[in-house]
Image 1 (cartoon, one colour):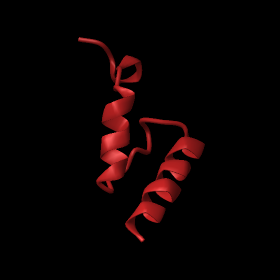
Image 2: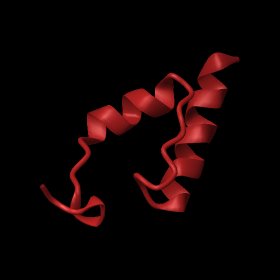
Image 3: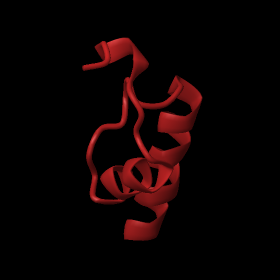
Image 4: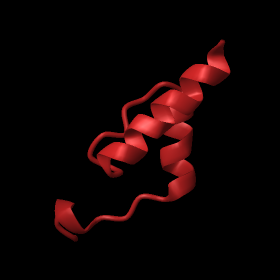
Amino acid sequence: MASAGVGYVSSSGVKEIAMFGGGVDGLVPDMVAKRFAEIYRSLEA
């Protein structure tokens, strides 16, 4: 089994997690996580 530092997460999976309000910290760079939060927060309004 690969170590935790060398895993793979699909981009569509990350987008879906963010869309449903889940945290993507640690899966993507900080700026990307922040942008996802902005995008999906604006869609809720």
